[in-house]
Picture 1 (tube, rainbow, N blue to C red):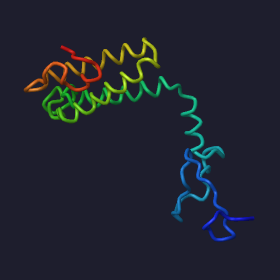
Picture 2: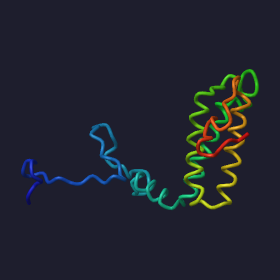
Picture 3: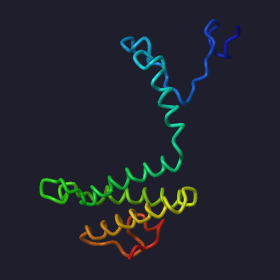
Picture 4: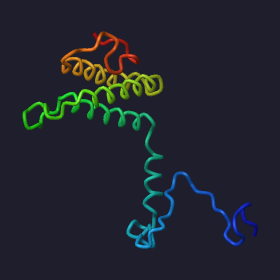
Length: 154
């Protein structure tokens, strides 16, 4: 058996599967990663699970996470100590999240279908308006978060 060039003879080089995790060099790690999981490695099981999820669901889930985080950063959380999430208000962070959401929704809309895109656009627009309302000095029309992707919301 021949090794790869530049490798010592005896230990052939095995390609690393980009989907599966690299085995741990930690001697305290479990010797059998499939122990307690019915003989299936948890990473293999997770890969199979994600393979069964439609792209539209992954995109929608990512958008919902961005929406939720942006809503909190716009001060829309209801469980803050001073009510209505005032303690969580962070418009710099909200701007980044809303812009990322706008880019995702705009890029994905043609592929996810009108039914999904419409609800994502509605949520995005609500966040853009909430950001404008929470701002002491609102951006000029077309300059707000995500508006370079969506156009002006006012």
